[in-house]
Image 1 (spheres, chains in turn brown, yellow):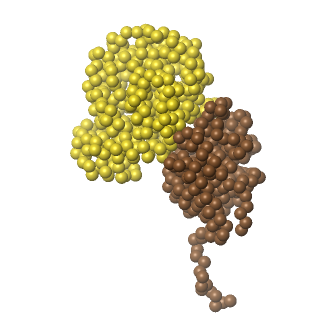
Image 2: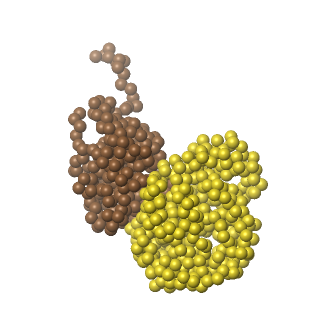
Image 3: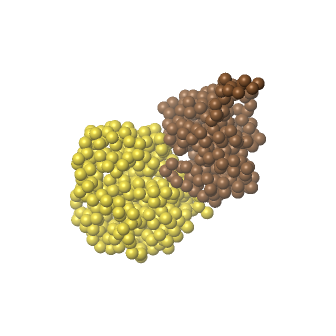
Length: 258
Length: 380
């Protein structure tokens, strides 16, 4: 299988590693991680940045819109209405009409609300947004969102910031198997091996933030994730294939009928 | 004011931990209990008691490492900045420890800012870069009624992304009214969870109603307030007792108000009015043990640190669990635009550095100072 570029809503990307911008100790640390990651899609929490004064902002000041697709996210929104307002505000301030839909009504684990996410996706798609929803690893929800017209689905591997890896592995496998849009594994990937595992399973991309922000050497960790994503992708293309519940026996029991 | 229930869910939890049971948990805890608490994924109340106990004192460095790791994991290397705006220093309560109290003997002008004066305070602070403010009043529903608070919130919202209040305890519908004006946060300290001490230090006025104040934070959460801050005024009672109950309160609120972010403050009573000697003074080491124990018990909860503490201590507390710091504060109404430098202040500021100096200290500690962490677009 050739390694084709990742295509989201008609746009082509060479990198399959997306990076989040929260939790970094400084603008310099964020920049070092971004440079080393090779990421082309970078997500930014709208609540955190001041779009009116990008120069003074420790996140926006290092994001060159020519180099990165800045993907605004609605983290902190509790309802569809709030998320829709945030997305519209970002578009009005000149960001591209793309939005990573994060509807996280409970601040403790920041788990996504499926009901509000579905509602907001429907509204935003009608408004002409390219919608990338952050979701629980729920295969049925993923299909429902895909039917609405979301550009991707972004199931979580584990709660945001937990570094626990692919705890939802079985459900993500089903999502990958059934999806007709790119599947981006988001949240919980704490080590490059977690990212490689997601890519080996056939995920189209992964998104990482805490693991880079919390590393001693931000650039080195970003590079490690980039390599892991590439390695995982190559392994998937080389024929690991999806796992199945049923084994394919190497010595068929019904061979005598041939 | 509605009659308050003495049998609220949290009051029941408090009742389940009478002083005798808590003392036993604190004084019987041994090194094994502390180690078990440090090894658990989800701590039980008994584990919190062990971490607050004398047995935990030799484990302070281990606790600090755990608290540092947990805070970094949940909040990253960032510290939010906020600033208080005192709207009024008029107070009808008589809290024995407070400089604003009716019989405190404090000298100084009493005033309530007019809308125009609120604007001039906001303009100064917005010019310093703040995007998050905390509006304060005394316990004075006549001088600063709910309609006035609503107006103040609406004005502050024109200048800042996030507006919180620290005022007298309100009814749920009053909190809802303020949320409608753009209120994001409510800070309401219980002062002390010990009923006897509470009654002694609040000799008169509406604040005497322990149950009504205890349930205030839940009312705010039900009204849709997104950030709820709790605290005990350290020095009124045994720090471990109030700290333990504060931890239980926060955990209860995480369940009861599951859509609100909970945060804790650690106001330490240093200088009280003449009539109120601080009976349970708290050493730095004890303050640190309290913060570390609560961080390990509540890894996802925000920690606020005010300018009541010195710059030297504040800088060293940054990596131990702090997530929000105030800076450049004044505790007198009109203090930023120098309306009346003779106005009575609530307490003396220990860390007098400017916001820019505090931000620089945060950077030196290896953290990113965050001015904005909320957006007007959340609220219509």
